[in-house]
Image 1 (cartoon, rainbow, N blue to C red):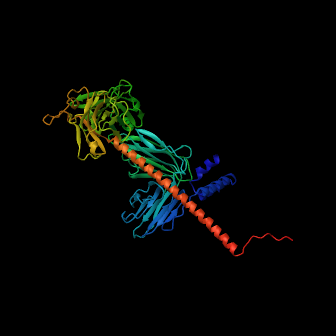
Image 2: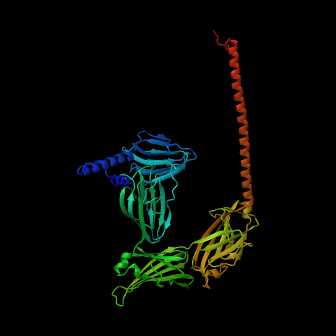
Image 3: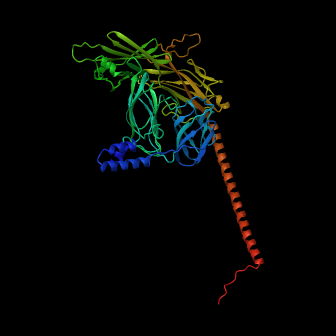
Length: 611
């Protein structure tokens, strides 16, 4: 183990470099270590020979491929794999003609049906990944400009890769990402994708405390790829490999990290800490359905003479959950948060105080007033920072988490999980709209709900309720609870002429204590002024609904197909049996004829003469 660690430590430098170093030392021990080092380096070195031919065919389970092509070529490299195997292809070098148009020069990845999996252009990011079952084709087309193009990709069958539980979706103000088995060695054929999102109005900042993966000048073999957005379609920010550390700041509050390793030289991987930093003005605020998150820059707080340990909310027991950055999770229903309802608008407000020790201070008095405002079609987030009567203001937008679900019965206990949801024509359909919030005084009102046979809700449409006015005589409202609205209707004429229907409902969220809110107005006619124009509204879509007879016919069709398959299989077996009998008969006839001919020409078996 010690020798392995010793070799890994020195392996990032050339044998010539260490030869010069060790030649100045005592000859025995260092030379032995040097021989082990160079032998190990030579054994692990990857000499990927460029493909000289215009196109080729590969049948290996895995292989690194480096392509170098010139001008005016159209070449295809075939990856031949069984139809039931999935192959992953990872591009890590893409040096095409930078002045060429994508229509003239590109790398096209095709599946076994020659359908495009993707097209890489001269201006595409160098990192790309594709997966497909069966054969995969890599086609490279170049224009007439005279220069050498280089493309490197590594492919492998997922059958040779060990299943790893890595990657995932992360959120929050801070966290840590590490390669599988860190600080131990990562496995070969590792491919992990992390999608990370920090709160709104922040930037994600990454600090790699260690990177120890296979070194290569172009990071072809093992690499960390950082994409500046929520997925791998976002711009490529950086590619890292080797033995190093790094600091990277993204341009938004989301990023995607990809870790890819090939078949050999598995080292110790990486570890990175990510934190959310305010976009500007030393602070940021984001609002969700049941709380708001305030983030303060520690350097800004320090410049005022305070630290994170001296900050609290109105309730002094509510302190920051982290100190770098300084983060407050401000709940709507505790920690001193004050709720106000004015002109049908809901406000949640709290204050961050800085408490100085002692009775005499010359430090600036700091108060950060944070407010989440629920108005019209969005949530406005407002933050006031006061420093000796100086006020700064920030305003952003957000939304509540509202869901709409089918239920099989009017007890509304277990929602329907099946999609599509099959029902009888006269059967009642039960629905519940819910707002996810810790505020028990919020209520939901169904303003408008209509059905359509089309998922895009093009005509014809059928109104169940519009502006609170019931339009379908089977529509029924149930008593609503905290944060939900319940209603039902019967399946109607659409299902006689259309195989399925979709529902779209406009939902209104109000405060139950606000007597004049839209939720308490009921049916609003055209001549009546809509006093609830400032309430928060959202649309929810649900479906499809289908008749059970369609399900039965589909099942019958499936049974019929299976019956036909059985008949076909039986017929095939019958034909096969007849064919075997015919072939056996022909063979027997051939043997008989051959034997008869031998008799006719006088050929016999004779006993060996004895002497």
